[in-house]
Image 1 (cartoon, rainbow, N blue to C red):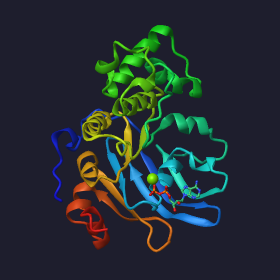
Image 2: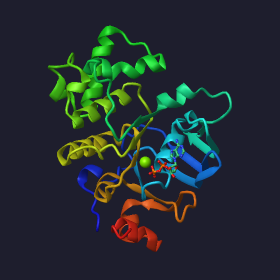
Image 3: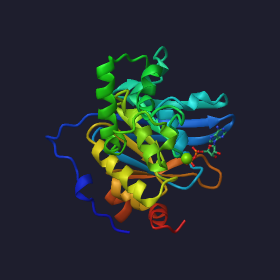
Image 4: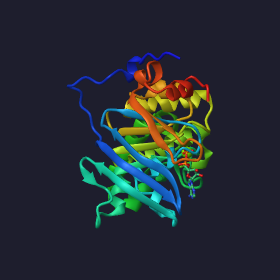
Length: 275
Ligand code: ADP
Ligand code: MG
């Protein structure tokens, strides 16, 4: 498959107004109990860039994402080595608060998970309680509109903000989850197969949303859909766990290079569906 960056995902010029943080993983290894599942993964995920993580199931992509926002350590048997820096600061530095990292690095999961009985509006602001952020009533309304707009959902729900989140379609629920993530003003948005449970039209809407978000927040997305990786990302990392060995990055680089002229034959095989 050849790839051609569409206009919405064209490279950002040097003068562009880009927000988001630079996230750097260095020699990250991970274990569940005695089993090593990631081996010395290093990757730069920069502001203004959508980075796609690709590779077969079980090669540690989700584990790697969860290390980037300190969710990995919630598993009792989990262990970790290496370094993750967010704009230069080590997120695992002793004494650094986990809630600070969680606010700055948001996560959207495969299965849309809004609070189903909670109103659409309250879903958007639900994360503020967790991070202890206070907003005035008028500020709250503005925030709800701004986040729903950024998530591409405002026009569809502006007249039904009091309806429960669970009343929305799957694709709308996923965009509501994106709006909820944005409400705490993260620097990085991690997305773990955000479209796997969605139909093609909803998938396209999420991809458009990602295109809009790219200059506002650093995006890292796991996807099994190679066309999606080619469409939405500017950089790509190919993960592999061969013969029970821990997952590692075979090759990372600009998306067009990974798809059109990869260095490693295994990368070419994977992106062309020969796995
Ligand atoms: P991917 O997202 O690429 O499919 P994962 O990160 O989910 O891969 O999993 C990597 C490996 O870690 C797999 O072998 C999986 O079985 C194992 N694993 C994932 N989560 C856990 C867990 N909570 N406890 C034990 N093993 C796990
Ligand atoms: Mg996964």
